[in-house]
Every structure is written in structure tokens, then in C-alpha cells.
Length: 290
Image (tube, rainbow, N blue to C red):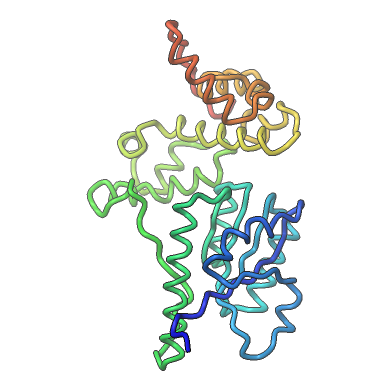
């Protein structure tokens, strides 16, 4: 009789537009019992039937799909949910966290990320087995390691002091932001906030906000057919010409070139071209209200 531990039981819900979950699921079959599941069949599950994880796969998350995730969470509150998504944004990550998603994973999946997920599943299965052997309670949440850029040092304390403002910018970067209001969130004077923000992030809050807007624009250029002017407005730029100038300077090519050449590939080639050029471009005057 085999004494090998049972495989983690994963049940997958396909919320993609191209029904590509079977392809993603194939990466997990070597170390788990993975099968596709209809969301409504959760209510029909047999009593005592074990499910260690519900994996919900999105390509472009929309309102019906996200509502379905919350319905699944309500129908099976004791089963942790992992959310896999191709289209990532800060707002979506915050939403997932507040919805108590156990894992939020941006695709495509790297080998290191797959291994980390496998180890976390192993830990979850041990907790379940300990619970079945009489432990007082089984934890349904886990706590990932701190990212390498953050340490429990003075630098970490500075991050903590700025946390409210940084989180606010991450959620509201498309709006006009006022330095005084950001400083007030951190209970600091504007001058102290400005110095500390640059010390922690290496740029002023205007440049940080601009970076967020440009990342948002790049994502829309790669994953939608929206007109470029509309993307600029969606990203928070009120002046199309400023959007074009900022994109050209910080990404290395125009928005149209970025879209036509395949997104990140265009940025890579353009950045190399800028590094090889002898001329130094004029510094762009920052104005996040533009």
C-alpha cells in the first residue's frame, strides 16, 4: 500500500474568452489532481468531497467574471481561491486582496512562480492533514515572503511612512493629484513628504505618477484596439500632445510605434536606439494634470 501523500485537489473555472484554461491547467497536472469545473456545480458537490483549491482563470477580467468569483467565494467560503489573470492592473490586485483571494498570479507563468505556487500548495495540504489529525484549526491563508526590495530596516520604515500616499497614487494615478493632500495622508509637511518620497522611490511623486500612467497606457496599447487618443485620456493625460511627448521620452518610441511593433519589443529596440544615440533629449516638463 502506497504511503505517498495525496495530490492537492485543484478545480478550475474557465472565465477566459478563448477558453484557454485547459492549456494553463496542463502545467499543474504533474503535481495535482486538476480538473475543469462549472461554477454552479459547486453547490452540487457531494458532502465530504475534498477540494483544496479553486483556480479561476481570466484573460481580460470583466464585471460578470469578477462577480462570479465573489459568488464562488460565498458558495464555498472555506475553500481558498487562486486568481490567474493575463490582464493585470493595480486596481485589480487591490480588488483581489479585498475579496480575500488566496493567490493572485499574473500570466504568463514563469517556472519560478510555478514552483512557488507548488510549494504553497504543499504547505496548504499539510495544514489540512494536521487539521484532520485533530489540530485546533486549519489556516486558509498564507503569507508570502517580503519582496527583496523591502527589508525590516530604516528603509522599510520609510516605506511604511509613505504607505498611505503610495497606495493612494497607485489607485488614483489617472486623477490630478495634489502634493499637499498626499502629504496630509502621511501626516507630514509637503516639503518633508517630497524629500522622503524621492529618497524612497528615487523620483518625485510626479515622475512616479507619470510612470504609472505610462504603464497603464502600454497595457492598453498591447491588449486593446482603443484609439490612441482615448488611451491617453484613460491613462490620465488631458493633452494628447503631452501624452505623445511623455511616451516618446520615457518609453523610447511613440504610442503608435509601440502598438505596431508589438508592445514591449518596440520599447526594447527603441531604448537601445536611444542609448546608442549621441544626442541627449531635452528634459520633459512634468505636469500630471496635462
